[in-house]
Image (cartoon, rainbow, N blue to C red; front, side):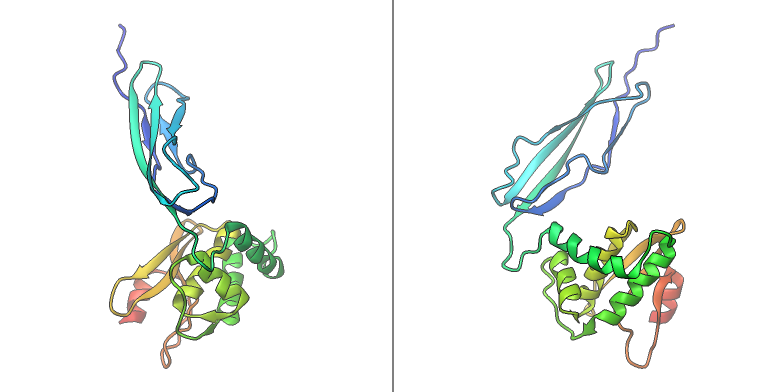
Length: 221
């Protein structure tokens, strides 16, 4: 009995991306393909419409076709932005974070120990001034490392740069309210935890290192 393959491959991980003019971009990073029959299916990325030298929003098409001819198509938008006046390149951020990490972590440390070292350094290195340029997180990280001053965005951005370079998965969090606030989530020992290096409110001391949702909610209350 010959069973016809009518099921197309699945493409997962396709996301919109935003970069500055002339920056490098990885179209396939984080993108995976699975198929009900074929173990290996080629991913074809059509990015001919993208102009990395001109600001604008461009469409990229992802295609995967199995041996039976079943095809899946996904699209993503690539936004090319004009470089701001105080542009900071990924290479500059990497160089800045590498210098810091070389002083505060070792390869023998666990992810928890590395995260704690980053938490302590960021909290102690940056002075809270209540202001930062929030147009780009890499600018915020550069400000935090080089100037050692800023607000919650600076603490978040600096933490993000250091955690990422140390190989620790993390996500940004922004509180959408009249009292705006930025911090991080980190993936440690199989779970996501709150990681907030911004100084706590006066009169309400709090160490926001690897805190659960419930713990953060209790403190906020």
